[in-house]
Length: 113
Length: 116
Image 1 (cartoon, each protein chain N blue to C red):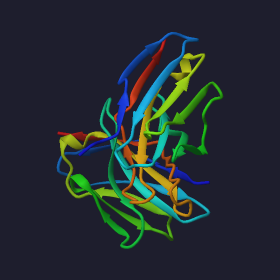
Image 2: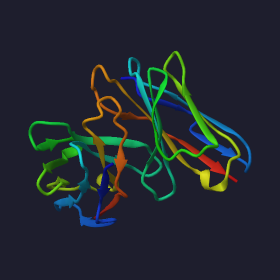
Image 3: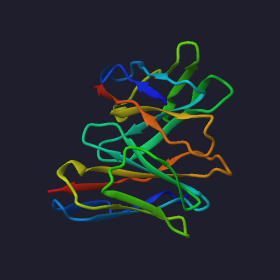
């Protein structure tokens, strides 16, 4: 079965650079969520989208932005990267219609040096 | 807002022994409850979830959990653990009244270590 696809799997950036993470939800899933998991931490909710509109916002820095496109894939843009942004970034998708539940991608490990 | 407490940050258990990982939650509204497992350097895999109905929920890999509304708990259990169960386990909650916007609030995790 198709899963949530995240790219890239690993990313190394320098301080003050910009990074873009991509998420491709399961087909027919209309809602995308982004989470950040720091080293040894629990995942923290960043932002979510339903039908290409932002539906909720968590502890997402102003330096980060995200959007969901017409094909339902989502991108998380991170600017002016800081060392503290080094983390595992997860995307998850779900379907409001089918209530099939939450599926997480394998994550993108971002390392800021 | 919801919160989740996993009191045990680390739980060592001998192989083939039973295990219980504790999870308590706090919420002013009704909730959905989840347990996720995370193996080293991997993503989050859903073990089981409680949405409604029977309070005893069975999941994958022989795990089960019981929802106790009066004690606001959702403890995870397995009668006999294997080496392959060594992982980090996260309890999570979402707002059941906010249909379709089910962001998760996670506990801080419990590291389960199986001792041969």
